[in-house]
Length: 321
Image 1 (cartoon, rainbow, N blue to C red):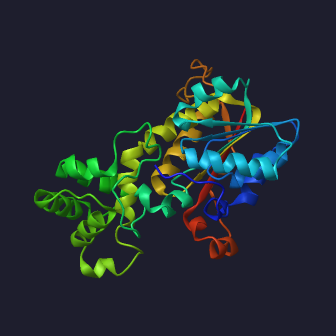
Image 2 (tube, rainbow, N blue to C red):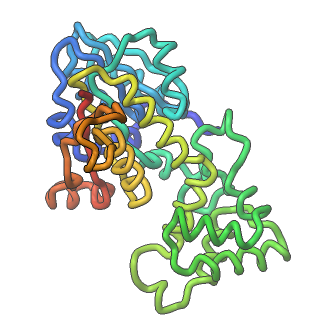
Image 3 (cartoon, rainbow, N blue to C red):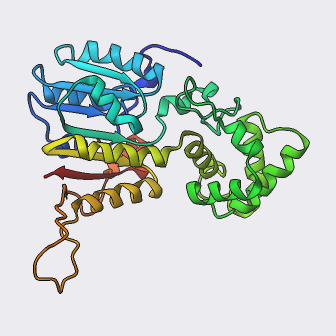
């Protein structure tokens, strides 16, 4: 695995920073948990909000991100106590138990792969660079990589992954091309996969909608890292750990993530589920959350112009009751 220090790549602009700070509404002495620490772009400002009497918890499964964040926080937020934890936010219960905190006042989830990970060719996330097919966010603990997915999954499973996780309408054709090509030789690089994807998409369709392999790479990355299952577990744990009046803020980048966030928030915001003709509640169901964003917040035009990654970002926020 490639390693690094605090480099310009880890200083990419955090998405919708002003909106995150406003929605989390942290104050001096609060406990904040950034579940997707990255290079600490959001966390530096969260640390400033909780101050010297608060606590910042940062979670990331990437050693390079943890190293970069640790150094940045030491320079830019030296007075704020910080606990940086290596792990996956799907294991939030265990991680917060290890941090020995009674509860959290503000959770931030900034979903998806970070820009620095995309920019490091050896990680195999990018369709712009020819590199080994990997796509693991935590290579030390995850044995499944993208090469195994594309070379061992059957055609039906590949098509399902591309269709469901990538929302790729040419999923069946792409899966067929992958299977045909690997029969001659395994697909071992990102370039091999890009060529297979292009071959499965009609030429006219390849000329529109950005890079033709974008959706397929997203789908395989989600499969490799079990991202949707991890998101559900992480959000359910965050609901349990959020202090009354505390908030959960989630930035998602594609509709699958956004639907999961919306569903979980709605489920925990629901009160009595008894039929309307029953005069007295017998279910005892009490809402745990109040949804603060009936419609997701999106980035302003000026931010999208500065930071293209913000174009597809959506923020949903809920408060613990």
